[in-house]
Image (cartoon, rainbow over all chains, first blue to last red; front, side, top):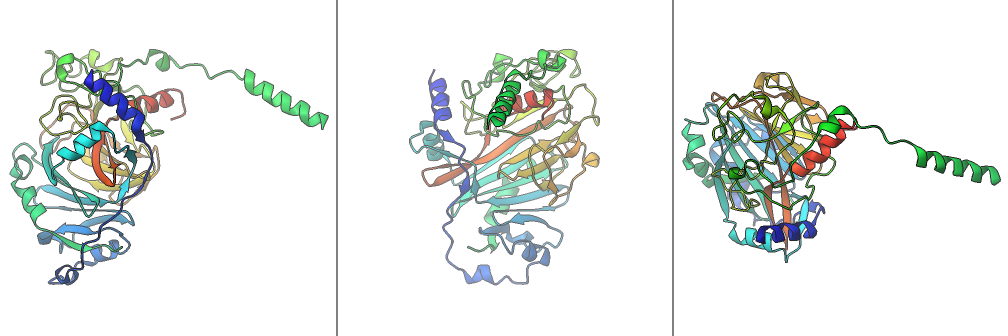
Amino acid sequence: MRLLFITLFLCSSLSAESGLLDIQWPKPNAKHQKPSTPYPAVLTNSIKEVKLPVYLPNSYAYNKNMIVVADNNFYTVSFTLQGADIMISGDKTYQESVSPTNPEFKAIMKASPPVEFMQSEGIMSAEFNRHGVNYSMAVECEKPKTDKRCTETTFIKELYNQLIMVGGRP
Amino acid sequence: MRTVLIISMLFFFSACVQKATPQTEEEKKFSYYPAGQLSPEKSGDGRNGDNYIYAPGIRFPIEAAPAYINSQVYGIGGLHGARGSLCDEKNYQYPWSDNYCEKRRWGMPLCPGGKGHQGVDIRTATCEKNKYYTVAVENGLITYIGKYTVKLRGDSGRTYRYLHMNSSSILVRSGQKVKRGERLGLVSNNMGSTKTSIHLHFDMKQTIKIDGKSKTVYVPPYTSLIDAYKRLLHGNP
């Protein structure tokens, strides 16, 4: 009964209003601006117009074989690493807005940790919000049942802890 | 002036008496359980009563009907299903049943128990792999192709995942713009070196804003897919 009430309430208070999220830009950091060696052209050329902070794991930010798909409001970077595909993306758009009084979403937001790691469909992923932007990372393995990068959170946590801002502009 | 009035009246009259397109045989057969009512009951608790269409106007992700939304895990031949073959004809029948929020170990904020399946599983017309095409549900960009995932970011900003297609059948590449209805690849049982049952796992992720904050979540696709399938069956996908 409680669920029915909640879902009916949700239906009546969801709004298919879309738009751009407000970004709280991080303060300029010299370390972010000056990489040890230049980032590969595939990255710098593709993210010129991206208007959100672009994060990548430090160890892989110089990988010339990365694939970058981006426009003003989002980016996705992916690359292959010994039998696994790694993906990170950031997006500053929203597709729905909910009333601040919505009990279900109030509870969801309150319960949300700063970063969530989970394994689903054999894919290890991380979700987090930084500067008001939503980011996700995924590790997808050729051997999802035995490759530890897809069965344990150690590898994705390492990637998360290595994130550095490599570009993006207001 | 009088002629204009007569023409307008005739036009209005003809519009009123225009017959609705008759239902196709497949439309007559199509039936479905309500959103959030999972089947069998032991498969978990769905979002009963949530009939909101989260992705209005999307195209059905499989090119041609019929297709069947039902449980892979709790269906006949599934891990927790009745004994039998995954290809049992009962798995390839209406009514559809929602399997968003079906029991899983991973966190899903919109599911009643906080855990569950983040999308729906769709079977094709027959139990044959590499025969039926998936298509783009809206105009957008292919942002990622993994071992068994194709990710489409629609112009709406919503992202859609298509899982378990045959990798060698993929017709698109990362960075490619696609049109609504454009072929992506063939439904299969690909899950890397581990095989799964022949089906398409389809999910939709979108960002929801609340009080200046936001969260990206997998939203229920079932109602959007019922709407899309009805249009597909009626010939205007």
